[in-house]
Image (cartoon, rainbow, N blue to C red):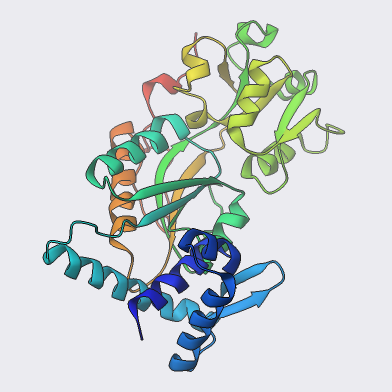
Length: 325
């Protein structure tokens, strides 16, 4: 067994494709495939499930992945101790539904990179179901997802609540609704509504809020970032967690504002998730700790997801989330 065989299988798992892994590793695809098959024969286990759409870790491979990662980290530690100057840099992959990008995600990544200058951070926007699948298969190290208060957390993941907030209506300051302290459902129905696509928590929330009263949305899009841009361009209004609007550059520039929803007390939770495993890559552990520390600085409630929260005792995300008077 050779170290590069383990590095190859880790690359295939991360990229989800023999072809993409071969391109990154600068190998021919047949050579990479044969190397992986040699490792499988030596271990007596099929590490990959090969499909037309790409290669993913098999169930047996997922069980062995923590051990593979552990070996690679041990080799890195050995190289570092020996004073190797060209240490192989690792990558940490974060899947996100594009929530709290400016107040939390970007500062956390900046802090992490300052302490890990040779480790690349790849941030990938995706729906919650895709993030969970990639976490299970080893494609993502960490996932940032929204939950509505009371949602069950999926089995097989360690979940940490980073922030809690509330759904708000995101609109332009020159909108007629901006003169109000809160926005009613009737107000929403009178506006072109930009919804998140099916699969996003805020899509589910808006359907529940409207309770069948709206026939259709004017627009739908992937993630908060595109939704905010569409609002800024005057296409309509959207509903997002407050922690995805407060502090956004468009809000700081006066292009966007937000208002609470009349009569609604729903809480949205920003969760940091990772696959349960005996061995977690050091870089992923460190980035996880940075997210938790940054969330604490923002005033988020750092309570294990399995512990019920008392809404009366939970502090708000930050004073800036109070609606303008």
